[in-house]
Length: 304
Ligand SMILES: [Zn+2]
Image (cartoon, rainbow, N blue to C red; front, side, top):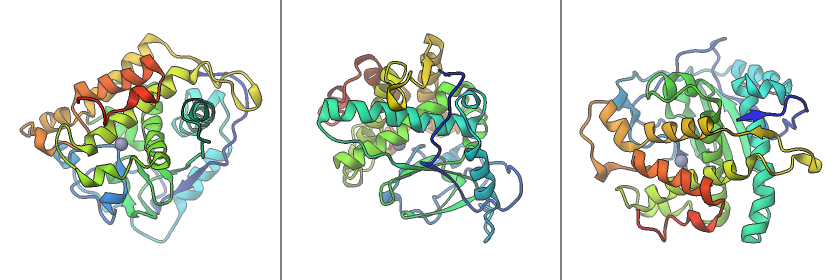
């Protein structure tokens, strides 16, 4: 997926955050537990406990400093569209703007509702949220209580590619951001609560919520290269190739609960699933991508 080579970005919806405090990029730590997060109030990107991958728990870089927040903020402030093709932080910023374009157009057209853009925080180390304190260890997540998407950009290379075997791919990074925005749409529509009532198992409400977020990510990809940019300008994204779709699908597969369990040497236990199998995640991304329809993303009414 390639952004236009010129044009500015509205960076006002993205902030630097976190208490990294180490003056540089640490290895991301993936470990057991989710720290102080109120799990029931938060949508995590990874389902099955990533400690299965044999990674060590980090200390989250605790401390009062906000070096990482300031560092990310100045990075975000200088992003433009051209840089979004090569720079991970700028790619996150540009993706949020593309998502705003698509959902501001499709949500009124398909559901008669006005889109309200969530905030996005780029962080490392620890971050305070309305869902509790979190560390990078939990991976990208969305907190419904403050309607904020939280992403540590190191997650992509260190966990998604390095530990789980996803292809190194800008399109895959954009899929992750789009999935989290899917949780925001579910918050607006009231569906995200369902996961708390039935949190585990291959046909649980939790899995249906996650698969629906994958479907909404696919829906965004369906429209991303045709929806006008801000002010009716050219679309922010000028290309989406078969290779991009293939990389997203391969990424959706490696974050399937079955793949995470088996790659960690654990028994595949569908009864513990919270996000769905590789096959399910692939299928629902492609459903949204092929059909471009909110209605087609009704994972609650479907057999999964
Ligand atoms: Zn999710």
